Image (cartoon, rainbow, N blue to C red; front, top):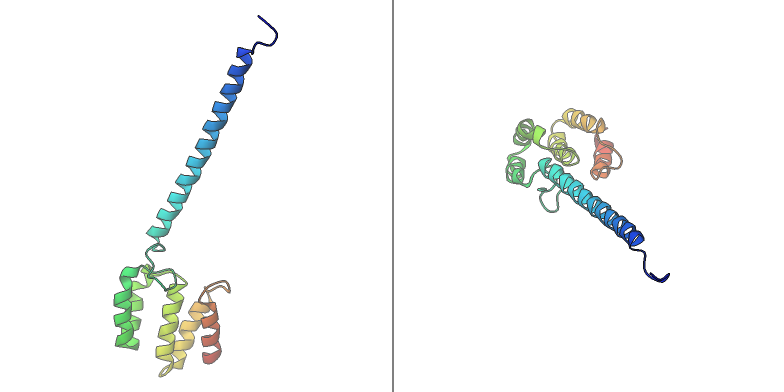
Length: 142
């Protein structure tokens, strides 16, 4: 053979390395895809993906109708709704609903409004989307 002829042994090694790199890249892409889908599924399980449009996250859209009905029913109705559904709602939406209750109750029972706001204070963080409203109500009732 001549010196300019390709070395098939070296080409096999290069081809094998390229195949391994392609497999590793494909595996990484697949892993990222699966991780993303798992995260989406976890959010759906927590109600994050079914949040009503224009509302704070933390509550499934299916509860909106009963919440609206409870708000129309007044303080006692909203208090009962919170007792029944508190375990199905997470912050920041839970804090927002509790602040609605504090406003309704605060007109006739400021001590109850302060009690509710104290409960929210224990768990709300300054980074929460409901924090600004909390600060305003906290100033008004304390």
